[in-house]
Every structure is written in structure tokens, then in C-alpha cells.
Amino acid sequence: MKITQLCSHPIIQAPMAGGATTPELVAAVSNAGALGSLAAPLLTPLAIIEQAEHIRRLTDKPFAINLFVQTRPQIDDAVLESAKQLLQPVWQSLGWDGLPTPTRWCEDFDAQLDALLIARPAVASFTFDILHASQIQRLHEAGILVVGTATNLAEAQVWQAMGADAICLQGVEAGGHRGTFIGRQEDATLGIMDLLRQVQPHSRLPLIAAGGIMHGRDIAQVLQAGAQMVQMGTAFLTTDEAAIHPAYKAKLLELASQDEPDAQDATMQTRAFSGRIARGVRNRFMQTMQAVAGQVPAYPIQNALTGSLRAHAAKTNDTELMSMWAGQGAHRVRQMTAAALIATLVAELQQHQSH
Image: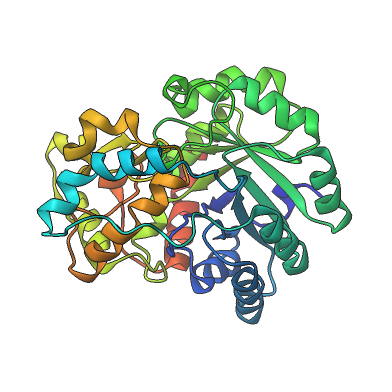
């Protein structure tokens, strides 16, 4: 079975960690003939199993679960203290005396992978690093297709060599975190069309294009350039079923209501929130931290450290301190149900393919 045979339409709803991809969103997308994806990187193993069961109560269609490939960090007290000092302009502006030390840094990947195998989605997708061949074999033995994320040719070739079933190519336009694991994240600068052109001649696997894809016309362009499917995240953030903070959703819809050209420059890449390069809507946090963002500790340490700041922002509806992940197409979001968005995208795609 190929990933392209799992659904009627060549559209995957991207997994977006942090609660956006509710079981309701995943099921609605799969029920509409596309492939819904549950973002599980921040979920406990038990929550992964429970949310997969919840999705199955809402749909009998295939769906995907996504994980970050990661190891638990070794914490150095000096690095931690230095990281807290770098964040001082932010926490001091809130009147805090200091930044609390997180009680945990990240979930245990091996335990999450075991839970994913119990949950048995049709597809498991991975980002931040590569799986071992033995892990891919376990997934295949459970009847699960494996999708790896690549931001350059070397990564795509490694995933292919390791036995992945498809590769998700992530262009620099994409919202949220970069999946780079070979070379520096700063050097993964190819847009999705250039990345497709670079990888396609060397790939025998289905390629999934991600980054800035918002309308049916965009889907038609990347399919014509050699992709078999698209993965769209930002486009689904303003659907009724997506569970992002209401102020974050309002911010995206505000961008969409602006006709000014600078609405297109509304996003930027930053390491400041998580210690890994990610694209989101520009705000005061990013700008305050811009000069020192290159000095923050790597994911997941920085991500856990800024957790209390982001939680405060959510409680106080302060979009200036939220990590509002979104791609370069954020100003083209539309507000509707997930099913209506799929239907709209398919109609637009057919219209462009018939021309």
C-alpha cells in the first residue's frame, strides 16, 4: 500500500504540535477524503493511545500520527542559568523575579514510539532526526507506513536508504519547526519548488510537498513539479476544529483581512522560543530575543524554559509573547470547517488542472 492510495485527495493536514490538531480536526480531514494527522510530540504515551482511540470513534478512515525524534537532554546548570539570563528582558517585563526551572524537558521518545505502535495509525511521520532501521522495521511489521521529513537532498536520500515509504519535503516557507538533521538549520534555505527540483531526480519514493501551500492553485503547481501529495498546516489553523488559542486564530484572520503587501512579511524564523528554528507570526518576544536567539540552548531545553512564559501569554491573551507558528502563506488563511476547506481546495485544484 502506498500513502497516495490511503485517501481520495492528495492532501495531508500537517501535524502541528501544541494542541492545534485535535482528534476532531484529524477525523474531519480524513472523513473529507484527505489524510488527517495527529501531532503527538508533546503528548504522553497514554495520551497518544487515548487520542488515537478518540479519532477512531469519529472516523473509520486512515490517519497519521507524528513524533519528534529526540533524546532527553543532559542538563548543565551553567547553560541553564545563562539561558534564563538571556530571557530576562521578557520575564522582567512581566514583573517576575526569575524564570521557573521546568520539572521535565520532553517526553521519552522510545515510550512514545511504543505507544504509537499500540495506536497503529495507517501512517507515522517523523521530524527532527532519522529513525534506526530497526525502528522502521517495527513500524512496517505493524503495518504502518513511515514518512520522514527532509529539508535538503542529503536528508531525503538518507530516509530513502533507511526504508521510509515517503518523504515530506519541507520548504523554507513552512510554518513551525524545521526538520533539518543534516547540516546547519540556517543552511536549509530552499523554497519548496527548488527543493522538489533538487530531490525529485534522485527519489524513487512518493514526495509530499510542504511550505506555503494554501490554495488549490498552489497544490496544482507542486503536483506539476513532481510531488505526489501536499502537506498543509497553516491553512488548517483557522478551521473550526483547530484548537489554537482564540487570540492566535484572531491574529491570523486579521492578517488575512489586510490587503497590504507587508502582510506577506508577517512571519519570521526564530530559535528563541524553542532552541530550534521555527517560523511564526512576528511579535515582541521574537524581536526582543532576536539579537541573542543564536545563543539559546538547543531544543528541548529552550522550549521547556519558555513554557511558563507561553502559558502566561495564553492566560492573559497576550499574542506578543505567544509562539504563533505559521507559514509564509499566513495572510491567505480562510475561516471554515475542515470539510469545507478540503472541498474548496479540491474544487480549486480541479479548476487549475483543467486549464
